[in-house]
Length: 240
Ligand SMILES: C[S@@+](CC[C@H](N)C(=O)[O-])C[C@H]1O[C@@H](n2cnc3c(N)ncnc32)[C@H](O)[C@@H]1O
Image 1 (cartoon, protein in one colour):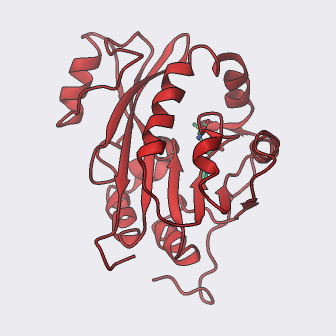
Image 2 (spheres, helix red, strand yellow):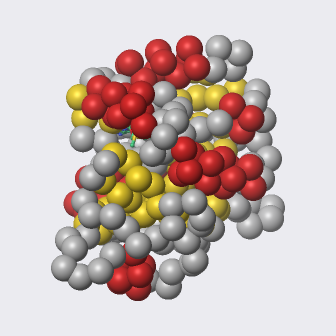
């Protein structure tokens, strides 16, 4: 466990321009949230509605402005902490959900090997939701053991994640309106969703939570398609 005195926790660095968020993401959300993204947002709402997170406090990592998160889900919690480095996203999120008690945290739990331990330590009684951020974090490719560290650090927490596992710039064969069948491995999934010679990017995040509770296609922009995985972890009884 990290020592709070010897090693202050890594802090989020504010940004407005980022590969996985920032201004470009807000503009896309503005443009496509009610059209291209609508089937995916419906599927995420279905995933969230089935997640039995039995705490009053929720921590969301990478919510952006909550474009793909529905109010009915958020209203289940008395207190919501967001870990989001984009100040514009924070502002819009508050405006979109004015009746919710939302606070900002400053931990960067995706930075370095001890980020997940800090997350567990700073928020011991909360449920944790990674909102489409783990498929884009460079730490997964940089440190092959990081996903193991995450699962180990969070084993006593209720936590869940939806994250992109594959992406391509040509249309997927998957159905946009319906969940995809479970996939045993990433190669089988890629083969099912695209035909050769399409170049498909692997985000190194398949099976990240330790189980697969859903798969969906997200048509992110006219020339961008992603396969997104949903997974839920519940601590063994007595551990939470
Ligand atoms: C693809 S967007 C998430 C989409 C969002 N969940 C939604 O509903 O529209 C990824 C988000 O992760 C945020 N992010 C990037 N690095 C992060 C970090 N180290 N910790 C928390 N969030 C981070 C970005 O600012 C961005 O808002």
